[in-house]
Length: 193
Image 1 (cartoon, rainbow, N blue to C red):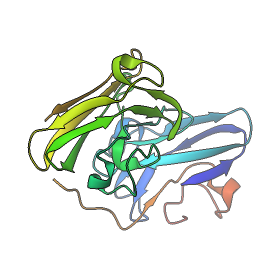
Image 2: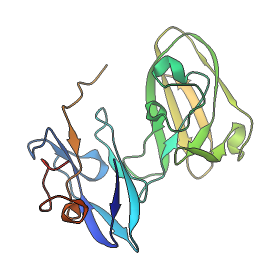
Image 3: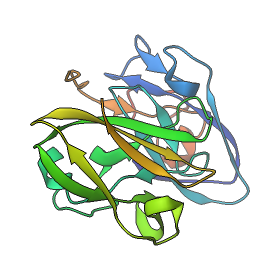
């Protein structure tokens, strides 16, 4: 979800199924600390949540790293080489600058990939961590093998190596102390989408 949030110091979490019974904060920790969001001016903030890892973040506090390549239609993306397809989203819940994901469902074969930043080709890294560099080849050894993708945000190196479905919630809301500013009757309301 993308929300226009006024300037200020805000906090948020992810709640599942319109309730505080299951919520995730900083680092994807269940019932963990609120995530700070400090905005100098009114800003369009895009929030991201992955139910498999429970990582909740935004495009202000975090790089959004994806791994577009010639394999993406096999994992459910609308097309290959799509930096905005979050099925190839690499995550860094512990904040160490290493973004990674286990991606399954790719048929056996040879493929190519790059790392992109913020769902766009404007900033991308190829072989050797070179900006706009050559595609990075990788091989999936057997049908549906789980592949491990890892991007180092310091060196810009993307590596791919051979390495269960999670039930999705009925809804994910992003309650925070900004909700009254974006149309909710109050703040911290998991039932207000």
